[in-house]
Image 1: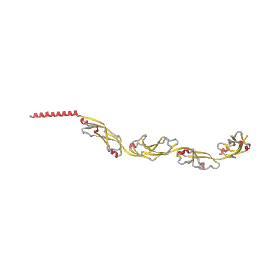
Image 2 (image 1 turned 120 degrees about the horizontal axis):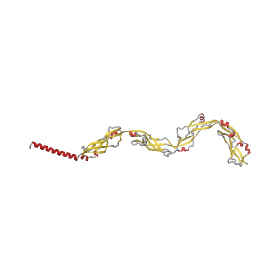
Image 3 (image 1 turned 180 degrees about the vertical axis):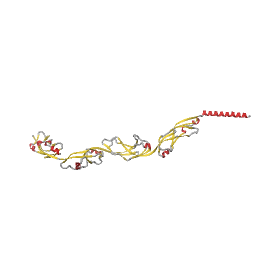
Length: 406
């Protein structure tokens, strides 16, 4: 074979090989083309969470994250591929408190012929909070109403405070640590155990914070109240020829609290007071003689006494029976005429001005014969006197009189 024919044969063979290869490639691309697919809501795994624990950090949000992943590959390979082969992770090591963007790492568990061409989002925005502890006092609040005759005493708790533990942002939201006691209609001392609640500024419950203890023992005294008049207990009498003309007690009534038996009190006395001290001073503070287990409803309330004492002056008058008003004597009866000559001496007392202005006619003497029949009787003489005048002495008293028929 000549050299020219040999070269031609090689060229023809090369063309045939090229045509065969082109046909194969063309056939392969048509039968098994490259295709792409997006997988949505692939869960993101949080790794190295122990690194957060070591720093006392906690994930506030998001609790869960997902990502959309777009992959591409041959149709034959993609047919064998599923979302389970996509692994999405975030590495939580090396971060501190606050908001942090953490990149999402995507890997495929299947054939390397499939490639990742896109993801959305590329990062997860985390909020990390520091775990802190804080001590906060317990406030006991009441709901409901007592009977109007009862009041609450000071609230006592065995536990004064609780220890809060949780994410800083949640712990700092706690405005009040409260226990609520229902006092509706209570008339005896209250001893209860109530659960503790964590409340924010808007009175909503705060969740996600641990606290210890979770309950509190509460004791609340319940007192009966009563309002009674105050009486002055004088230790001594006024000097001779002097008289108390007025006593001013301010206030003249006081509200007390105690057990249910306090309802039996009708008045309360002051502790003994020396009248000489009252004569020398005005608005004298005094203490009340309180029974055991009884106290003032308002412990700051003060009681003062003012006393007015005046010297007594006297004036005497003489009255005959004819000057005496006879009352309630039966119409068929009369006083024996021998008794009409009897006289009575009367001593009136009062202030200097009152006695100086007093006349005999200002005093109205009278005898009351109600229910008395014929016979000899001892009858008491009475007087109606002006204000500021009192009858100090009547002589004789009583008067012996004889009642007869007309």
